[in-house]
Length: 300
Image (tube, rainbow, N blue to C red; front, side, top):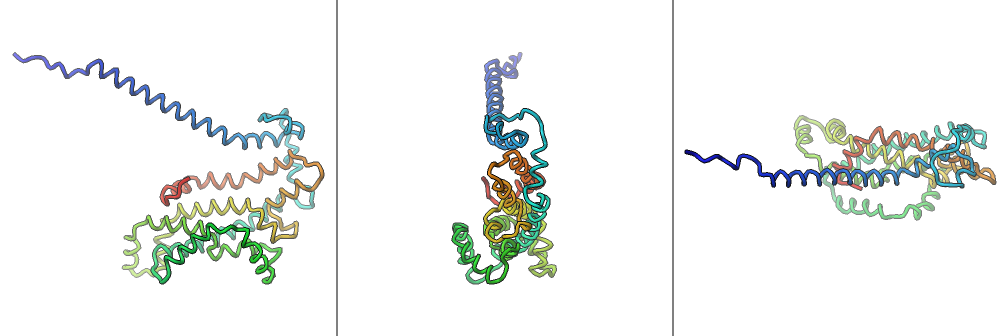
């Protein structure tokens, strides 16, 4: 006669142990999300305050750190949009896009070509040139301002957008080249070799094989360049002297310095409007931006 198999049922002690472990994991997840939520609120508080302050008076703005205004009044937006000059912010936004769009185009073209050469081509002095290029990341931009200004003055480019746009056509944005090189090094060469066997030259390989694979990295370049150019203050301040050519960054400063008493609500309101293009571009490209950061090893 066979003895009953007692071990088929789970012992009560094991059930209790698994239950405790499951509860600890759930509590850990809840605490983790609470901590992330609190950190997120702290980081987003300045943005919430900025939006709320755009509806406040000067007395309310400096009277406390609360988020909610006494009433929703859009007068500050209308007044800030008109500015104190003869031009509205529509002109300044148009000027910003006249700088941003061409600069993005030439940046993508030049940086992709240079990165492809460093990642895939073999030539004399390649390692030395790459080291010199990366070393320029440590070079303070301020020491280049005077020689650049004198050069552009001799070329007759002052009070134009050329000093801001043209240098990017020569892959002077070293960070983008480095990021693209890192991304290219993670792409296998199998498809490129197959395309070369089929008769493609290096340029065709770049256009039809590499470029589609580089899409996430290129989107990251576009996002970074868009935000950095929209926020650039020193470049336009040095090279532009005509008010009708000012981008948004200079127009904001001009608005705040136009009168003795600054109407902070108007300045803050137009600052909120100025943030919208960068925020929209970032969220529209967020998927590719994160994919590029994960693939290229550039994490932050």
